[in-house]
Amino acid sequence: MLLSLDDLQHYLDLSHNVVRDLVTEGELPATVVGKRGQYRVRAADLAGYLADEATETAWFKKQVEAGASEEELRAAIWAEHVADIEKFFANKSPSFVDDEMIVHPDA
Image 1 (cartoon, rainbow, N blue to C red):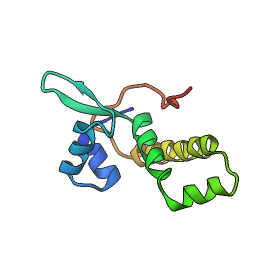
Image 2 (cartoon, helix red, strand yellow):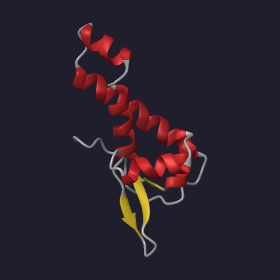
Image 3 (spheres, one colour):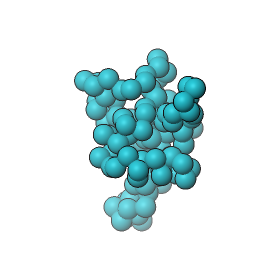
């Protein structure tokens, strides 16, 4: 699933400028498509970005200190975000969708 900046804006509840900055500054990987050079973000990359952000939280650090595997915890967070993204767009029509399954980037 490929998402437009508008899709990301609605999902993340951020301004269009903030979403554009995340993409243009390379924090959120994107592909340029079409003659007009529009950005598209893979849902798997969005989930990865959100999982990376979660690793900076006090909750995550506390879980790791308590003995949780950082890699397994991040993978679980990634999977939760994938499910949330799929659920969010299940009843909506993303601006651009292809038939690609959301696959973990390390798979």
